[in-house]
Amino acid sequence: MQESCAEQFAAADSIINPPFECSGALGTAVGSGFFISGDGYIVTNNHVVANGRSFEVTTDDGRTYQAKVIGSDPQTDVALIKISVAADFPYVTSFVAIPNG
Image (cartoon, rainbow, N blue to C red; front, side, top):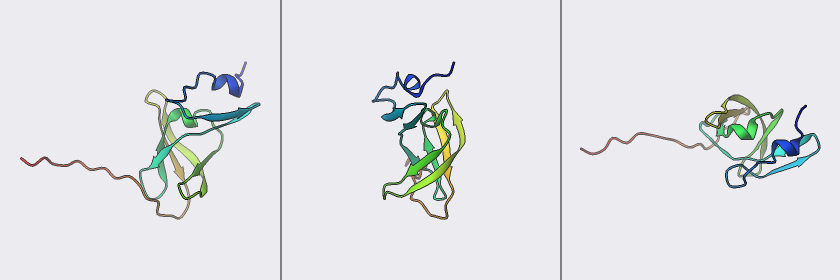
């Protein structure tokens, strides 16, 4: 028997898991993430996208985009999603600094 939306999210911890809204068989999960490239790749949590059917990303400027899951890993709770628009999004960069020796 399939769990209801409320049962699926009953154990949500507001500190670890994002807040959510749920009504009936369909619900809405809210999460966070960050761009890792200017062409729309976003890292988020697996528990945000797990069992989802459609995904929307709202950026800081209030714009909303449709997204698709590229990959996810339940064990590490990491997911990669992608929005497909012709834009150059600001994104986080990372580098390895070589210590002064």
